[in-house]
Image 1: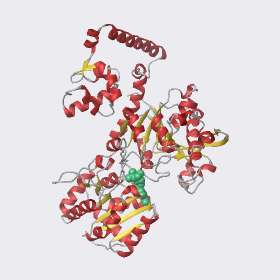
Image 2 (image 1 turned 180 degrees about the vertical axis):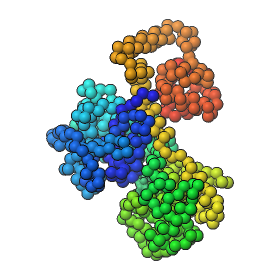
Image 3 (image 1 turned 45 degrees about the horizontal axis):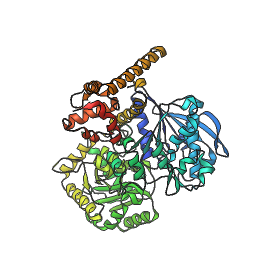
Image 4 (image 1 turned 90 degrees about the vertical axis):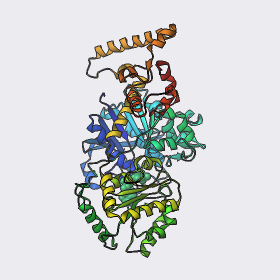
Length: 585
Ligand code: ADP
């Protein structure tokens, strides 16, 4: 695989600033791709919330001015390296020195400045990525800005974009007045509907319509968001881009989250040395003022306290949860009504319920390590990282079967599986799952065996990082097949000669196909027999698709009809039509 250059553009990244899962992803995926030899760099805003330890490590790289239509604004670029990954910070005090990251009335200006700064920084620092990987609405205009403004310059011409949806609910919606006031793109993009939804400017929709590829963070969520129930109003746009939409499940950093070496938790442990788990539980009981009792098991939640996370289900059966005898630990902030509810529950059951209404990274790790069960009854969940951290620390997830929760937690039955699950968004279905977990707690041996098993599951970035790299390849392969197979080390002349030869071959192949029907039939490859080299020769199948077709064949046996290819990851109706002339059964 050719080495790629990637700019990962994000509004947050751990450990610098994080409100949720996007921060975890931006803090760990780039590192995983760099470990595979690619030049991946990250850019994010330099918020005043960046803690002083990191602030003092920043090195000033450059500064320039950019335009947000009639405004001319300062853009500073500062940099630090973390775990081998270069992180660039876009500095402008007027826009990023705020008490709140996202809820500001001028947030469109904050992020337009960020997006323009990130793009213009590239030519200033002479970093020319093959791929600009954008994430969520705060970066959604980048594909369009590139197309409309920057691709007219040679430096930007070949850059491709991937737009990843981490949560479709947050879309970056603004009044139409910002079209002329701040966007700085041709108003036609608004009037033709591509960046408009319900009469308003929608940054998420812009990313969906203009990204070269769209991804979201699990397979199930990728299917769900094409339906009205999960589509948050944009399901039609996602169906339109269905051929270019793929689900790639999130991973977590196994190095930074290792119970065997983690310095934040009370005691280290692993699957072969498990006594530490009980030490953590005891220490957390003491730390939170719960009854200190080795027979009491802990059920926890760590989350933003918002409707999405299924808090209403918990409210509905909170007394019954207390009655299971499990201790209940809540760490979260958000909706004041939910915050008050948990405070009140903990005041009523001080020995059994602890409500920590705050954002606390260290306490979060301690809770993952000390609990026996971790609850995520989400209404919808693009991927969810809590359940992955929980399993890494030997804590059994209890989840609703939706989005990434469905893809990462296997129902536990007869000693097989990884957690307790329920399907319907219903408080009593959730309660049944919690009660089944409490039953398991009365059989400590079986519980311990499950806890040790889930610690051995691999939720590191390794496989998913590979999938992103394959996807990057597809964009390059799809549009420039002749260049993708050229060895980057070759001299320009050889490269050019090969390109001309390849182009001639393609031309001749096309000519042969149109002039002789029989000949073209002879050239078809058999989809059940072809190896990857043969498959790669088919128009519309690059190395990544060839690999996926073979993997699908290995798993499911021969294709019985060509339309079965639609089941292969990433192949949609349009791609199938382009592949069909080159294959048969
Ligand atoms: P989302 O991105 O929707 O918030 P995820 O499960 O993908 O949900 O990611 C949530 C991340 O934020 C996890 O790393 C979780 O541990 C962390 N988190 C959520 N609330 C808190 C909190 N109050 N304190 C510390 N970490 C938190």
